[in-house]
Length: 161
Image (cartoon, rainbow, N blue to C red; front, side, top):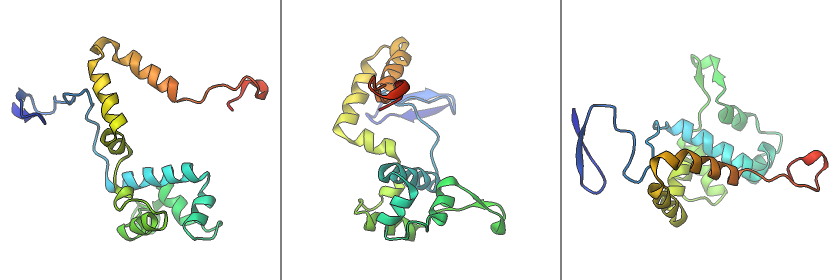
């Protein structure tokens, strides 16, 4: 048994490894490595810019010079380095942030931290905490449904618009 100290100072004794939920209902997920966070952020930038070629152009690279970033984004294995995946170093992360005028450290900050730090994120977490435990799965399904694109009735074959 070990004592767990909550952010509000409350302590509870729980068997090691059993603690999984913050007081506000946040599930403690596995910590991500810096490489995993940077890979996710790189993929987020690709989505924001529309394609890897467009991101390369925004970074000042040639549109067809996407191979290195693509290898990093996909986590391709470097066989010449003992099977380690391609990774983004600090220098490249800071250069991307500077070029795209992102806050320093943005490439190293998980997306869910941004949500939790925002006013809307805190409100969502507060509201979620008020939902009875038995109804939380339904609430998550509703939130998932709200974030999916709606079907455009004018689009051919009912495809997404």
